[in-house]
Amino acid sequence: MAPLLHALTSSRPRIRYPVTRPTVMMGWLRRVLSARALDKLLLKAGG
Image (cartoon, rainbow, N blue to C red; front, side, top):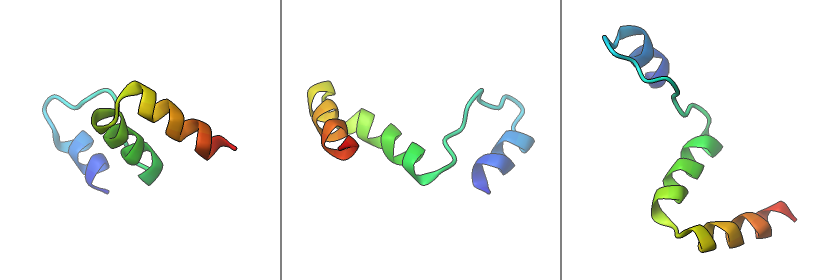
């Protein structure tokens, strides 16, 4: 609910907001992990 409230009440809302847990987690992982580590993690998760 917080992203929706922010988008509706902000004078300059962002274009995109991460809403679901997986999307928020991916954004966090992209900032924390290196590209190689993220690729490795995604390959393991994908099967």
